[in-house]
Length: 69
Image (cartoon, rainbow, N blue to C red; front, side, top):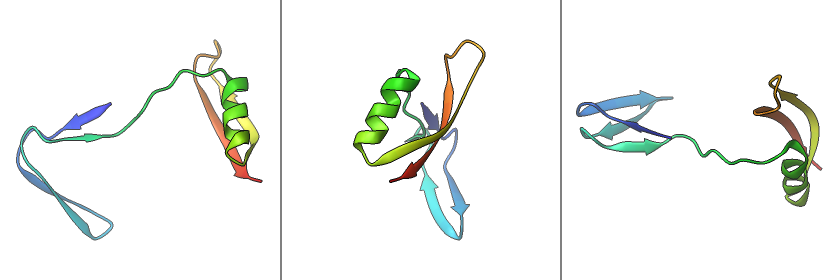
């Protein structure tokens, strides 16, 4: 997902200023399709342990709480 600036503007976040020109975009999200199990394996290979998983009723979306091993 991308957000596009609809005008020239300066945005301040945590004391740091960012200038955007009209039409300039920022990438705000990547969406990847994994099962809860396959994501757990990927996270495990990167050194994380899954502590909790929350899903919607149809298991289409999840939020996962991970900790470093």
